[in-house]
Length: 374
Ligand SMILES: [Zn+2]
Image 1 (cartoon, protein in one colour):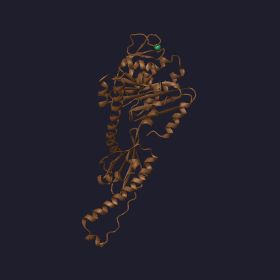
Image 2: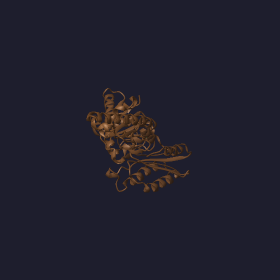
Image 3: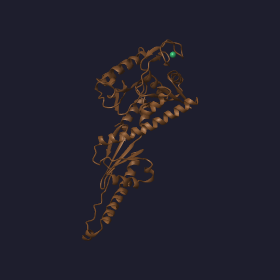
Image 4: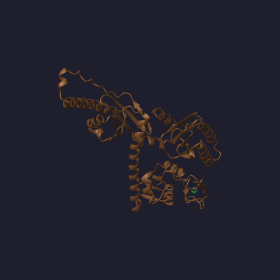
């Protein structure tokens, strides 16, 4: 899990004098194109292009060599590799994230942290509480990683020894006592949990465990937590963190799909009324070149060819013409989507790759579109 000290190291890099090479690389092993360490080849291609844009930059050439060496030791156990290398400081930051971020390489003074910081900021932190009549467990999930917090105290009050007269108590009365025990346990867990969830800055809550105890806990939640409750799921109390992560991933994916659909609906509305939306490659590229894109939206997995101007950095739908901005000849670019993402990010915009129903909705007009700055 990415920690505060990682961020501190990155912040240091972002303020270091001289240039830093920052790399975001798709290493997702569910994508066949990345298997057999082919992501290393892709990185080499990207760095070759970058060097071509900075001819004669010895510092860049040496830094690229360091990074190409360093990636050999990367275990591709996630979706995105983030690397930042500052040669004269001798500092290399290397981290594998479990979330996808747009691929890109950046050579500039200060590490290019915006995509990472934004992901840290935008991703919701999920809390998962599993309860039964006596115990409770608390886990948090953030950017695809799960962590258990051992500090959720669930004091269980042992039932008082049954007096002999209990034997003649009606079954209903015994059941009522058990329910009262469950309710008081739920209240204790709810109070303790609320304190911890605030401390951990949890945005969304999932409750699981034994069905009755979970239902009782969801009723005992303080009001401000009730709004964050997403779902009560029958996850067994003894599940491993990996099993819990798998169960909650479905819930998260559903929430993400809904949010993506909302984004595309907004976009379609803007495009139809000729407002802040553009669709299709030519219009989107024109908006990117002008630095007007607030959010670039494309279908996940989309690949596009196009043209790139080495002189001014502008992009064009094909390399057949001259640069729309400066008139210089264009170079062919096979990784247009990466180029577009990087340029939007560098101009302070956002990038969203969408999937599923949202991508189908987007397909009504194009594979690629953008919402413009107001
Ligand atoms: Zn140009």
